[in-house]
Length: 221
Ligand SMILES: C[S@@+](CC[C@H](N)C(=O)[O-])C[C@H]1O[C@@H](n2cnc3c(N)ncnc32)[C@H](O)[C@@H]1O
Image (cartoon, rainbow, N blue to C red):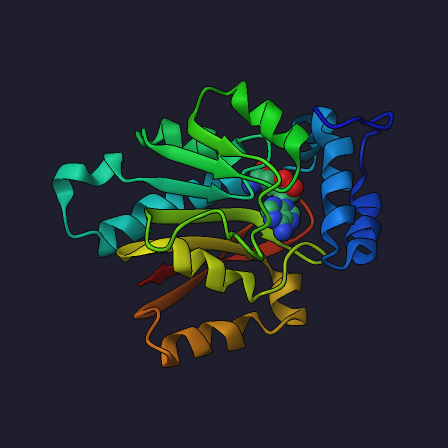
């Protein structure tokens, strides 16, 4: 358990300021979420954070399009990258998925995710920019919701998600619209396609929270 400062309820304005200040600094990001962990679920519910639910349904729909083997449909090995307290994992479980792993940079978020009993395994202190503890080609699918967000990770982190995904697998990533507009995420996607590390990329706009919309990306290796 990482020590906490007294947690405070985060308003949308506070969040925006924190995002700007973090600027992808792993120490700042982990300390921000370690301190917020206890109130995270309550705060994001108030902010009508629908992305975990929307992304889980998008994941199911995308898998129906790209997955070849219907017999293991719900048993696929999934990594929830930046799982936080487990909101996406819970939604995936509701849709029937049974083999979900999670990782996050913030140990206190992971400790809460443990309490959901959704995850087969959980790894704290795992930085998506460099998942060196994770071997190549080991997950059938990866989902990452709420992480490709201003101040959190840089678009190149997508390469790490591709690296740990099997060649038969797929990835679902959520980018806030503001993230997509202010970073080179599209360029990273285009380059991954040119390098033939991925075969197709689709994007759908959808709701995120009360303030912003997002893009939901389905990436097939
Ligand atoms: C907005 S929360 C989303 C959590 C969860 N996926 C959800 O939708 O509720 C962002 C999460 O990303 C994690 N995170 C941010 N940067 C990260 C990084 N570089 N590596 C791993 N996790 C990171 C944070 O610790 C936090 O738990």
